[in-house]
Image (cartoon, rainbow, N blue to C red; front, top):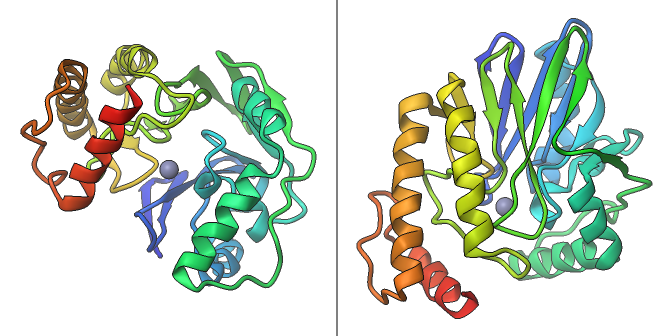
Length: 257
Ligand SMILES: [Zn+2]
């Protein structure tokens, strides 16, 4: 697990699995944690790591309902989880899905956990909308396409945009069940002006990007979606995202669209 302060009030923690990111946002004494690392030792260490950095989260948020972003309560079992309405809908429609997928992933990696995942009573947040964190407002923007649900968070005061599973420098756009090419395109179009107004963009997987880096990934993703829509079986994939695993993701995307 790696922790980097991308702003005085924003720490990005990156898991050893899939470079999954968790983001602590702070204003004054108040802090929130968005998404989660994966491994039990990372989750166990997280509260102390954040505390030492001066972050004491009052609540948890998840960018979307995929299990790898929902593990915050394993680190902070007493905190409530806030999600977009679209994510709440998905969690209600697929009860136990995140827990099942987590167990399957754990068993494939031979990972054991001290306790099972419980999401508790999650809070639904209107998206588009705003959330107060201390003196700051965090904007919540819809970000569907990867899945049927999701939100991006813009902390304008800090210049930090958190985008869930979009704009990753290490992973192609993934069209999961419930996601769609059209919705993915709409999300990229919605994110473009937000990226323009950000100093740092934090994708759900991979390193935080500066504005130009994020705009480059956005362009590459638009080109990739064009190739996907054409049904191109061997498109030229962006640098850093052309591995065998990314080819496999492309084949899965072709089957999905
Ligand atoms: Zn993910």
